[in-house]
Length: 203
Image (tube, one colour):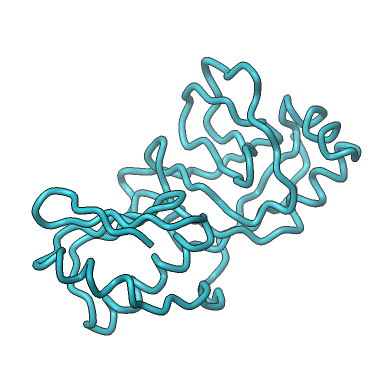
């Protein structure tokens, strides 16, 4: 674990894996909830967590190295279910990579429980861990991926909240709104959220 100063009131904590970043984020949230840690904002990423709004970042950096960070605690909150039609244009390519048929890709994906590790790329886009098998990105990214596209890349699953360029493998579509500025919170998926994908028939 490495603590790097960011400005006068922030620290960027680097760890060695996504699992460690998730566990550290969960522990920081726990300590903030109990009053052991005073911090304005916690921002997890693939292998880092940013702590912003600290009164004494250098003192915290010294203490952090001796912390015992337990694994991510059991997931007790409700599961967000995302209805998905497994009709994506890259379904056959993913099936070939896994050595299965297209129906098995849908079955494996729908059988898994995912967790939002961190958010980024676009408002409302969550990087979901829990994919049983990894998938390479596309060799050539698309200039426009439709909103609602359910996609895979590396160890992650994600859902494009709006149309944007992207190089992930598209395996399905959903009509669920991932980002709505009129909703509180605007993002349906936030770090720590449990997610399952529910297959639905194409119209």
